[in-house]
Structures are given as structure tokens and as C-alpha cells.
Amino acid sequence: MNLVFLGPPGSGKGTQAVKLTKEKGLTHLSTGDLLRAAIKNGSELGKKAEGYMKKGELVPDELIVGLIENEITGNEILNGFILDGFPRTINQAEKLKEMLANNKVVLDKSILFDIDDDEIVKRLSGRWYCPKCNASYNYPAKMPKVEGHCDFDNAQLKRRPDDKEDVVRNRLEIYKRQTKPLEDYYRKESILVAIDAKQSPDEVFQSLINLLNGLN
Ligand code: AMP
Image (cartoon, rainbow, N blue to C red; front, side, top):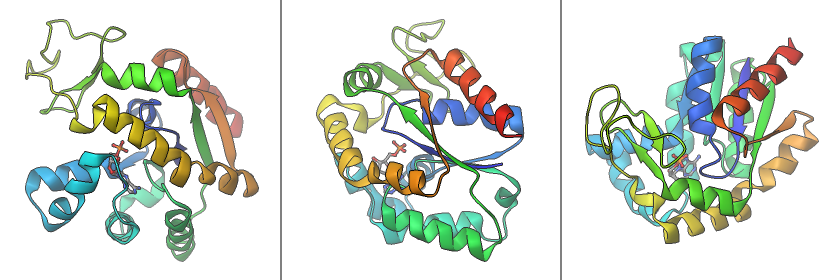
């Protein structure tokens, strides 16, 4: 099963991708996570990407396509994957199509996480994560047991710098301008399915499972 998760920032793609990869034995590939790791390691890619990410802008296509190409080529990922946060432009989608065709792999579905802007701003302003194990929390919907500390390793929780409200608004604008056209792109390819991402995380997960079971 090869899936693309499509949807605005804060729609829950990452949380659901982590759960679904465990359940279905898929590989989860998040370009956002890969870029944040590159920044942490101080790599060339990280240095080039950091400025764009801080402002909530998209990192240039050639950097992202190179990153994905590296992950895909000769990798286990081709046994089944969830792409989370990629593609984000029509050009990236075209490049992905080419890469998959070269490896004789097809995309089964593009799942759209449907949610409105106000809910996104509310969610992202309450989002915290653990810098050690990457677990995510949300105030007040999913609080840690001890305020400000991770349930799994007790590390001090952090906020993503691009979750500040003005940056979130910019990310939403950019989503509408550059990424939303992918909804039509995948609709035309007849592989777009939408789920209601405003539901609770458990309900969204159940919707995903129902949807995928229906495909088998
Ligand atoms: P995310 O974790 O998916 O919200 O991504 C965080 C940030 O990483 C985005 O706001 C972009 O700056 C950058 N980014 C992640 N994926 C892509 C992509 N496919 N194309 C361009 N920029 C990306």
C-alpha cells in the first residue's frame, strides 16, 4: 500500500502516519522531520532549508526532490509507504510520479485530511513535542501526565518555532496557493479520498482503517 497524506499543517497527518505505519507495517517518510533532523545535524541541506522553514515558506523543490530521491532509491520504502508532507507542489508531484514509475511502483491513494483554518490555528497554538522521542502533545486535548514533560522519557517538551500564530497563518496561505492544487491533481488521477480530520485522533484513525480495509 503506497499512500500520500495531503492536508494543511496541523491536520494530523504526522500523528496518523505514525500510528498507521505501526498498524500496517509501512514506512513513514516525513519531509518536515527529515529537514528538522538536517537542521539539528548542521548539514548543508539543513543550513539551506532553515531560513525558509522559520518563515513557514516552502523549501525549494530541487532540495526536496533530492532528499526524497535519496530515501526512495534502492530502499525498503518501496514495499509500502506513507509520504507525509510531500509532495507539496505540482512540480514535486510530477517528479514523484517519475521516480515511482522508474521503480515500477504505483501510488494507491492520496488521502486528504479535511479541516478548517480556525481549528488548525487552535491546534497548532497548543502543539508541543518531545525533542528526544518526537512524541506529540496537544493542550488541552492531549496533555502530558506531568505538565511540560514527556510521558515516555520525561524530557522537557518544546514548541516548533514555525507554530507561532503569524507563521501558522503564512503556512496556511502557502498551503492554499501552492499545495491545494494537488487536490485537483490527484482527483483527476482518481486516487483522491477525503477524511474528516476535525474528528478526534481515534476517530480519524478509525476512518483511515475503514477506508484502507475497503480498498483490500
Ligand atoms: P511539516 O513538518 O510537514 O509541517 O514541514 C515543516 C516545514 O518544512 C514546511 O513549512 C516547509 O518549510 C518545509 N517542508 C516540508 N516538506 C516540504 C516539501 N515537500 N516542500 C517544501 N518544503 C517542505
